Figure 1: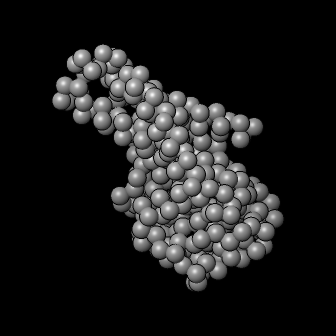
Figure 2: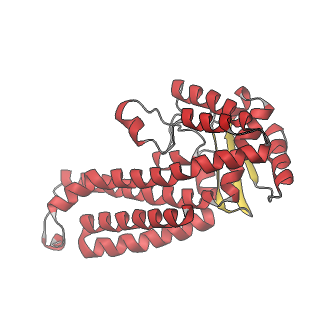
Length: 279
């Protein structure tokens, strides 16, 4: 059921992109957006790990605490060993990316290595490897790519409005009202679909990660520390289209923005973990 819902949500996200292209450029714009969605889906499939890792300046490691923790979890749970990266950001966080378990990568910031115990790190990496096992990483990467494109098209529409791009003989397919609605609604729709995809997967990844590391309290304890650190010092220069990939929301969520978080409430995640029996 989760897989079917995710496919439907991904289809909806693609349709939002096509609608945004139509509002921006008429029938030609819609066709271009459809082709672009196909290209981005293929690009995300083959290169999602490289795209996101390079975005956050990750460096691959083949030894050290993080590598050892990931190696222990993969050997214990019969998973292929992913590539392991450390990100230079001081704010503690982590994510997984890639197209399948055989071509996956896990990444953690320098900050996470400074505040978590080895047991808590086992819980976090178990969560990320659970995403890998259930192929959530591909879904998240494609969602990030398409949502980013929709936001970019909305910015293009804003510039078109500022410089009189509503009319002209080449724009007869354009509807000014549709263009204005696209500027406002398309990014919101993309965010809501992205949020639905992400939230539906996080609880399952928490549960799977707890089973992988053998103790749900490891991850519960880590989530407390990560939530506190990210609420006090959000990660700088985060691409909003990739925020849902992190284990906790890297963006500051004050006011209305917290209602549209791509992550379920950390308090609820912790409650569910603490109600699990020790595995």
